[in-house]
Image 1 (cartoon, rainbow, N blue to C red):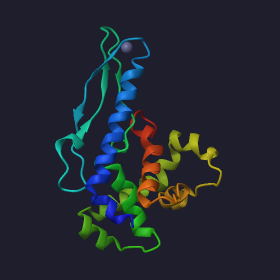
Image 2: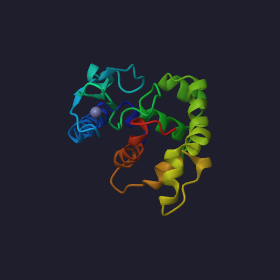
Image 3: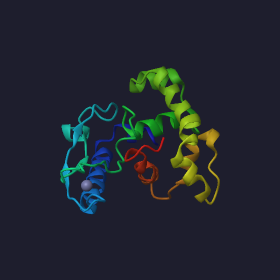
Length: 188
Ligand SMILES: [Zn+2]
């Protein structure tokens, strides 16, 4: 059920719209110094997602304070990107789950089907099990869960924590929105 989201162009379009809203909010808030923010967006080379994605999907919103002497940079949260990961965040969340979820798929099958190397898949798994649980982001959030989220079962346990009666899309979206601040500052 998650598998179809990985290459769902309309789901990606939704993520882009959410990112545009997040960027507009960051811009409207302005710089802490009181200066206004100018666009300083840049191009990334994200991997994953449907082949049909337009150039907009690779643009990362970012802003720069207009005041001489400040020039502070503000990068809004994002549901498309996950920190500095090259692949779209959606892939970094879902591919490890496909490998270990209820209908687990073999590494070789995921490698072949999604053109993601075994090395990358294993690296993501390590990131979820070692780097992410040690991050300030996770440390700050872990006490807030009503039901504890098992770090040794990440990211599947995170997905389960956002279980939605609506649809797998709503559930995954909730996870990506929860993770979005990870991309705006150095939390990891
Ligand atoms: Zn400023």
